[in-house]
Image (tube, one colour):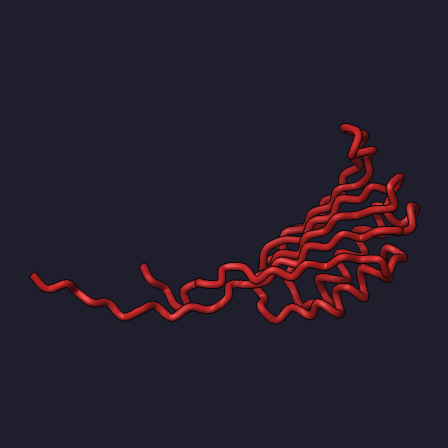
Length: 139
């Protein structure tokens, strides 16, 4: 019996996941829901992304020792999503930018986020996503 050989499927990278930890941010900016909404709106436009729903910003009270409360923001974009969780009493924010754009301008994003939170003390981790994403329909 002969095995049927199939051609390998061409692949490409699906996108990028930026994971950011912002330290020493200005507490007032971390607690400003309108400012957070503006930052996300401006960031989405600058990165040539496409919002598919308005930004949701929710104030969250203290939950445990590590979470003294702050704001959580989320916006769905056609390319995926952006989320932010702020902790004004810790001068800290955690942010995810997940996009199917493989060529996202990380430097521009960092510049805008640094300016938006008043902090240059940011850890940024750039993780390629879907590194074996099929380059064409397979079904």
